[in-house]
Length: 65
Image (cartoon, rainbow, N blue to C red; front, side, top):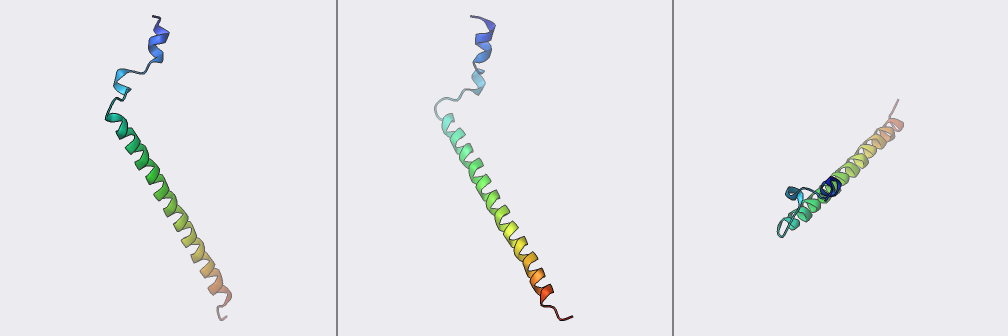
């Protein structure tokens, strides 16, 4: 075997077997869920801020001067 063939194979410590494979999928699911929740907060927060700015413009337009 050449050294290049050995370098192409990942180290044994990074290989997952049996029950450990499920942990990777659980972790991926948790990361995906976190991204969805974070995106929901950003979208909600952006709309809330835009509504507040719209309210300021509306109140400013209808203010008694």
